[in-house]
Amino acid sequence: MDSARGWFQKFQARGEKFKAGPAKKKDMENGRDPSKPPVDEAPSNITKQKVAAAKQFIENHYKAQMKSLQDRKERRWILERKLADAEVSEEEQHNLLKYLEKKETEYMRLQRHKMGVDDFELLTIIGRGAFGEVRLCREKTTGHVYAMKKLKKSEMLRRGQVEHVKAERNLLAEVDSPCIVKLYCSFQDDEFLYLIMEYLPGGDMMTLLMRKDTLTEDEARFYVAQTVLAIESIHKHNYIHRDIKPDNLLLDRNGHMKLSDFGLCKPLDCSSFPNLSENDVALGKNYKSSLESDKRLNSSSAPRRTQQEQLLHWQKNRRMLAYSTVGTPDYIAPEVLLKKGYGMECDWWSLGAIMYEMLVGYPPFYSEDPMSTCRKIVNWRTHLKFPEEAKLSAEAKDVVCKLLCNVEQRLGTKGAHEIKCEPPKSKLDPVKFFGQE
Image 1 (cartoon, one colour):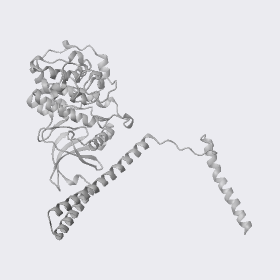
Image 2: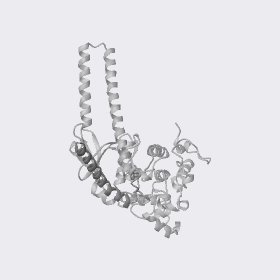
Image 3: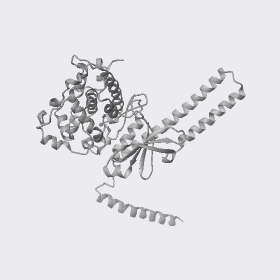
Image 4: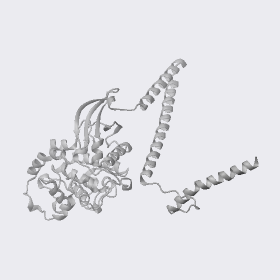
């Protein structure tokens, strides 16, 4: 028996040596020392992103579960307190508490329901974009009306815009602000991605400006102040919008404004967003080479128009530009066009261009073709002028000039508080224009 056991141990040791031999040889070929313990390789950036996303999802899930449980307990405690104060009989208290539990169960069942296109009645189309359409829809169970953004997956993949759509969805889910269009839910099928969003029946700022030509300074103050709050809310979450323009400022039924369309938004931490570059905001064209090769544009290259003539020309082309594939660069900051690197301050330049349009009737650097507009923006010191017919106050001009300027001097570069509270270094104070709470 002992001899058999000894033979078996020798055979087992020989088998382990035979198994270790090829592995040792492979380690030697790969330049690893088999005598040393193996070193774990660092995970790739993709793996780190997946881990961070999974961690965030799990944390948000359990945070929502705990909050839901706490809210449920609080609702029951409030009902018990009201019943005790009302001196209701024990049987009636029992029935009411049982009814509450039934409603809570129904609510939890609705929360677990997976949404889909079949849950909505599709109504009229209210907009079209590069990847799909925006359609009015009505939820079948509640009758509530929403705006359904329908994005074609194959088109997003073909144009390499998947990261943009992810950023838009993440921003809408993360930012909870009354100045931002709300995202209620999102889902997908084999062909499309769907975003169910808040429907704002008041139209957009572009339509309002086309209807009214210009706004009074009081009206402009109201809308600019709301835009400041909207931009501040996304900047607090380290996002740059990069596409602030009247088309993306929507009005609700009460006339209050909300910011929308985050397809070009960009997280400030670019390491998690490797596919983004300044080309993403260049409206489908590389303007830089043309801007550098032709800096001879001056005021004599185009006929001089009065404010009314410029306004009529702008209105004639405005809607066509809004829905064209190229778009309009009228609200893009010069540092974006020149690809010199930019940050959140580019959104404040866009605000200045919108404020100018509200008060004058057309953007400050409008020209008949987009390339000429870009040249004017880059050479803004020469082309930023206020028509005398507009009759703007000194305070309004001062605020516009401090938004349409170099990054170092631009209001908002150090934060929205510069516009809301702190006076600039000049004698004119934007607080007098915007008002102070």
